[in-house]
Length: 235
Image (cartoon, rainbow, N blue to C red; front, side):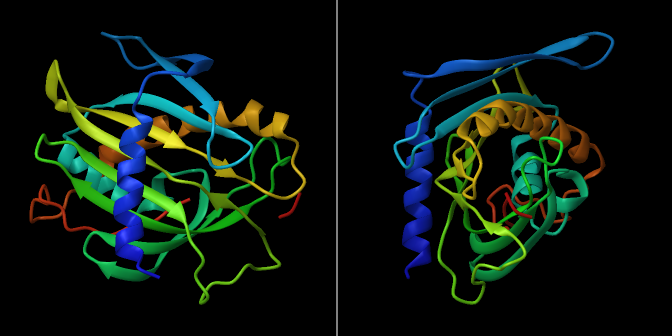
């Protein structure tokens, strides 16, 4: 399989999701942020996925870090489980080049244990644009070296990812836009996924905001990006 060509295609699909038409607000959250600006509104939206019988979800957040550092932080696999509380494992299993790799991810259970851990094999790709916008795109792929395991339900991530760009009114901060469309598989009712996914996305933004506070960027500033990283029992 030509993983590089497939990875480049996922980036174009992510950019296509930025079309604002057809989205429906499914959750609005007020998040405590600090003294001067005590609350930040988080809006999670969704629309029917064109990939499977489920939803494509969208959420945005403001991260008080540069786009370069935020992109590197999200892309690197080495420290992902230290801040992403939704994961119990996140490992790069094959590196195609400096911008493309395959990762094996194992999630935590969530929704008070009603959704058991899943595992995913995802292709991850980093693309930097001249307008100082970075896109990290991913999708699940078949990878014979990591066949489905009886320990977990093998989930499937349709094209998902992040768009990172400088905040217009404060370029030292970044706007993070996230798109997710996960096929959990197993015997889950769609209503359980629809009820839990918005809260999970809000938690991801909050975990990223907390995690990047202690993240030290590599000594060689990686704004032209050459990076590494990866993503994402039974019911």
